[in-house]
Amino acid sequence: DIVMTQSPDSLAVSLGERATINCKSSQSVLYSSNNKNYLAWYQQKPGQPPKLVIYWASTRESGVPDRFSGSGSGTDFTLTISSLQAEDVAVYYCQQYYTTPFTFGPGTKVDIK
Amino acid sequence: EVHLVESGGGVVQPGGSLRLSCAASGFTFDAYAMHWVRQAPGKGLEWVSLISGDGGKTYYADSVKGRFTISRDNSKNSLYLQMNSLRTEDTALYYCAKAVTTGPWVYYALDVWGQGTTVTVSS
Image 1 (cartoon, chains in turn brown, yellow):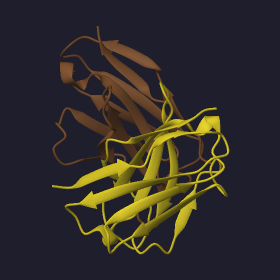
Image 2 (tube, each protein chain N blue to C red; image 1 turned 90 degrees about the vertical axis):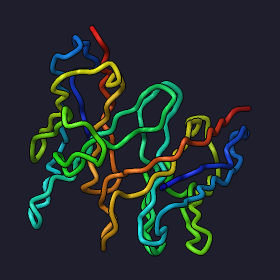
Image 3 (cartoon, one colour; image 1 turned 180 degrees about the vertical axis):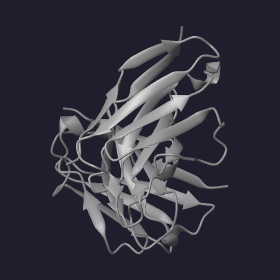
């Protein structure tokens, strides 16, 4: 199975400042035939189901604010919130869908400093 | 509007069985792969199972393989998870979710999630 790790476990950022979350996969999730990274990011607020934020490592889901961006390739990925807003407080999970089982990272909790 | 509604959760003793259902609406159900993902209380997300749009391909996490069976009835726009030989570690909120796009494969992110149904395995 592909093991997903995230860092940090949690972070607190001032409103309007940048938040950066890292995700690493135990093997590459880049499919060479189509040059796509099979990596997604989800946001989960308390008491709510997860919400897709980014897929194909850098494609923003429809309706997601452009302050959210994804980058990286192969085994190392980053989710960046360029200017943190109060409504961004949540736990963020990365997930690989390159192969089954579609493993998730352990999550990173983002709070306001 | 795309909508997923899970049902069938409850309290069951270890070794017991439950069947979860997920009613889908607002999209062409048989065109999309569907998933079950669970979340134990206070824990992270764990992918459980996946079924292709036509139901011909199924995949499972090792933790549930041989005990859980995913299925779908495209005529009823419904997804199911038959859970047998339940263990205390299966206690979780179970979500159904749909793939973000149609296509010949099943390897896509999950874009729409239901609110979940709670399964508690306890004696």
